[in-house]
Length: 157
Length: 411
Image 1 (cartoon, rainbow over the protein chains, first blue to last red):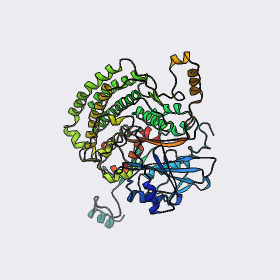
Image 2 (cartoon, rainbow over the protein chains, first blue to last red; image 1 turned 30 degrees about the horizontal axis):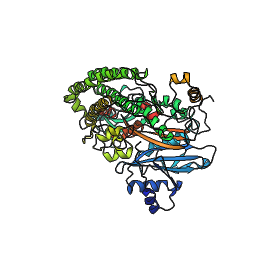
Image 3 (cartoon, chains in turn blue, red; image 1 turned 60 degrees about the vertical axis):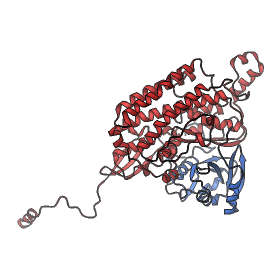
Image 4 (tube, rainbow over the protein chains, first blue to last red; image 1 turned 135 degrees about the vertical axis):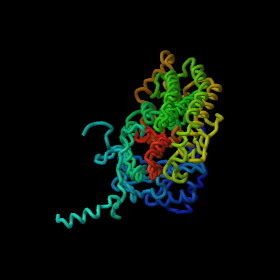
């Protein structure tokens, strides 16, 4: 089966290591997909570097995974895509449940605006410096964040 | 009022055209949607108008949020598949395919050639189906009434083909993890052949109505421009990018489901307006037709499901005679199948652009997390950039050229 082109030689990690040695916490190549775990505080800088110096001109999406009840509870997940290199990479930041906050990457890609709003709405992760952090799917007065694991799938309040 | 004051007023009647400098031209806020027919679903655009010119636009989405991602977590992998049809109701099979590919990648199972080719064939028919609905409704928005009737005539035949394969016209759930739900039905080749042989002449008919139509050209040419840099930055994908000259189609750059074995071209234009997007999609219909023809003529033979007893339901006959088959059937239906731990982001080219499924498994029989990245979500985000500064009438043409589906946006 052809693999959705992901870098397999690990040169991206080297490129990022040269940019900031402390940025990448771990790297994993699984099923042909590269995942880099990034220090949460450096996500905006890493993304800016990947966009300007490594050719990742597109942000394919932002989402999150809730690992409740283990800590750090949240994983913020960024899927980056380079049309010119025909490569994809996944960035991941682990966030604690009591301080689910991370820098916004809207200054790097404007498309992050709605993607981050969705994560804020459904997971309750706060994006610092986001220009318009409001709920996007649910009504403004909604209580709770449905995609959290401690939010029930069905039932009445 | 004294006489002198009254005569002063009469002597100098107020100049009704003069306005103090502080008064700005009057702005009007107009709600377009969520029930406006040309928003194709429940999209609300808050437009600030100065006369007929749109000065500010705020899209408001979420009216169709159904919590599909949350529901997937409560179902087994095979059950969750039926929800993916409902994400993008104009391209259900594209969503089926993307989800299946993601889960199959997690499972590491090989899909037999028949299933792969049938998937290509039906996904391309889905592309035709989606583009036909787009063309019909887009034309009706701009005022060309009859195209709609022609498009739906052909769409009906496609839906009948889906019904022949799966028993369902729209929410087919025909692709399953591990292959197909049923073996392709007897006589499908003749039905698909009749349709696909006549389809190019039908596309000619649509083109006769529109391509050189003066009104169509006036309404679409030079309308809805947005630079390629802005598009990439704002998350637009699919035919819109190709109408701006970027030759990027996931079917070519990262082929899946044996697309690499098919001979087709990726149409592009450089004008980057509504008309160019129309041309790209019409050409895509012709190319899809070519792919369907190849799939029809070169269809391999063999089983339609993978050789994975723990994932694929056994044949009915084997269940009656073999104890093992009966046990597997019981286990798959009751508990589902366990998927090895891991995460996968599978991307395919849906009719609207880049469709991505991010599936995380924790080793159980239910997905830990399913994230659906619908192309319409990225595309819609660019609406303000597209429509601010243009005339209200052109808003209809511009957003029509994006071809979004709100189910895909809100999920």
